Length: 256
Image 1: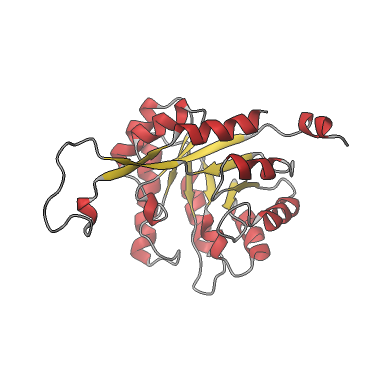
Image 2: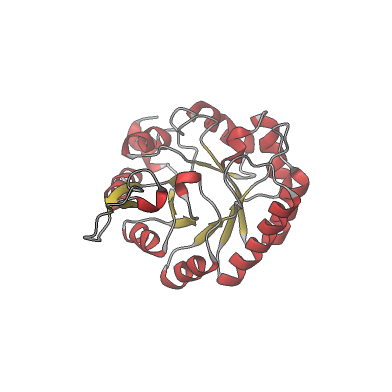
């Protein structure tokens, strides 16, 4: 099969962008994002956003907003209080108008906590449920895939248990073949204009996840002069924003 034929048969692709505010979500939408994963504290791997943030994004955006439900940083083995908080956050997200939920739970032995994951998915219905990159910390990815499918998840976000989706491409392709269209395998982590080309060339993925960020200096003319400067998180002189050019570059590759 020649390259032109392969390109013509490539499945239509969707790009999900991880954002942490209404402003960054709007920027991602303007750059061509097809869906938002909304969270806060991206620097900590992402945590559950506030009700106000969810509601604002849902009201402003024309594209779907999926909400990350993660009560704290660290591992994905949760206490009963953590889990009850997650269930409440799902209810809040649904009430705010979210179109999907992104979450997941592991057992201490590295297996998927199927009991709790099933409860999260049941509580999410009728919205879609994405099992997130907790999968990449699972002990046995093949068993984890089957467990996640049996729990009823709509999609699996993964880097193929590597630092980036490009490095984990072999496992991602294997997972897509094993899934047999029972669940969407969505590559994510480290995606840019170069790596997306390699992922697209496999002709097996239909959705991709990306965090397109650039650090910006604060708009304020005031500069911190206290002893906190440079050593305390509250004293940072800038913030992360969505990089429209990075998204544009990836979308151009996807549409070419």
